[in-house]
Image (cartoon, rainbow, N blue to C red; front, side):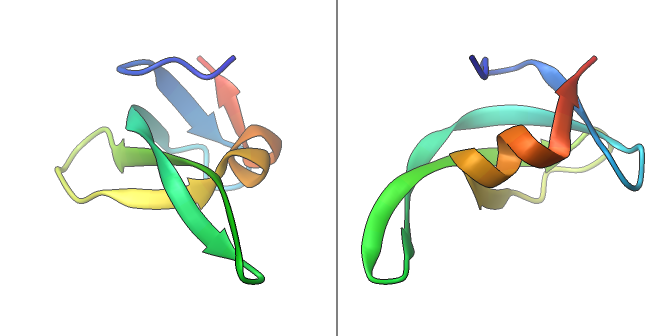
Length: 60
């Protein structure tokens, strides 16, 4: 289970990101669950589907 305000590491670049919340994103015309997250060192927000986030990030 993904947790808000928790640090996760990207599998490829090894950077740390903080989960800020959850939302919906459209994928192939279907609304799916998504994760809002930001780099540990700035306030810019990013979004990925929950499924993709779980594949590419690991809990610190």
